[in-house]
Amino acid sequence: MQAGRNCGGHPANGSLRRLSERTGLTAHTLRYYERIGLIAPVGRGSGGQRRYAPSDLEWIGFLLRLRTTHMPVSLMQAFAKLRAAGDATAPARREMLEAHIEPQ
Image (cartoon, rainbow, N blue to C red):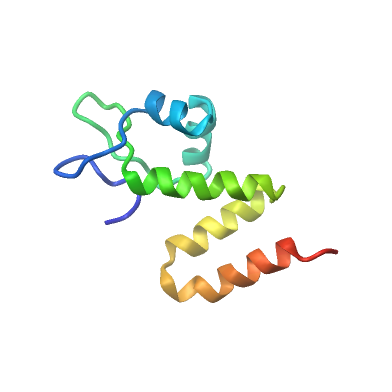
């Protein structure tokens, strides 16, 4: 199952507000991350509210760690695209992370 595609049958972390409280990110930032592709499209409940899966929380935690390294959003987007392309991109993602943390 892809991150964010969790509406029925599996426990979800819940609403936008709840995820905002758990991550410290504002609801605006979470919606922005979804809009620019950092977060996969999020499943919706019967009333249309976003319903986040545990995998979404894990991924957002990783994004928060990338932010602490001062990684630009554009690189975070590139990393997210590689991640979405699957496990075959793991070496490229590792190279991206290593290049980012190497002293210039």
